[in-house]
Amino acid sequence: MTWYPVGETEHDGERLAVHRGAGSGPALVFVHGLEDSWQTWRPFANELTAGSRWTPYALDLPWRAGADYGWVHRTGPSVLLRRALELLPQPPAVLVGHSFGANGVLELLAATDRPPVAGAVLLAPYFRPSDDPVTWQLFERELARFRGVIGEGVRRRMGERGRTLPTDLVGTVVAKALDRVGPLGFVALLRQFVTTADLDLSAVREPTLVLSGALDPALAGPRADALLRAMPSATAHTRPDGGHFCHLEQVTEVAGEVRRFLATLPVPTLV
Image (cartoon, rainbow, N blue to C red; front, side, top):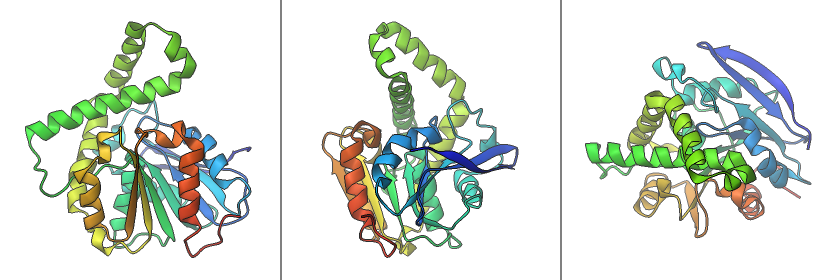
């Protein structure tokens, strides 16, 4: 599927852009995670929308790979997401977010002035139950998880080349990526994680599918249960063999789950 840019703007000194794939139906909008790219969505979106009436759009957001995270001082992810959605040539029908992007979608859904959508899909989000106190132990735990996810993302982008390089060389590449992201990237993620417990998710009416992997601690065990209690409109499924990037590692299987969910929404269904 050929993708092409359909809009670009600047907000608080940060570039926002939208790319579109083939389609003529309602807008299925993809929101990438921290240190990722809109292009990451292409294999998954192509699989999900093949033969359908959906029109896929992928947002290019300031937490993309290579960003300097200066926006952390000035604004927040849900504000940037809202501005990017204004670039769409048609109203968003369904929002699909991964990791940091999924939590940006979650924040937007919890806002009283959220844009109207038919539903949302959250891939590998994270959630802090209210009984998980914000302590130095939480800080250390989440910093370790942050480093692990950044490392996993770097290795995944290296692909086959990363599997043939010496382990110490790959480790050096990961360490450089972590140094470049720096504390600001972690602060953005930590703030997003900590404040999930304060979101009024009980007011969300839009059907929401939450997909995570059992190998990913972002939404493991009690966290998933707590999210479902806080958000009655959500349903969740944990893939027993999935990790943080299960939508890229198990494209066909995860796309099938999302396709079945989309077919239940009050918008033109996939055929």
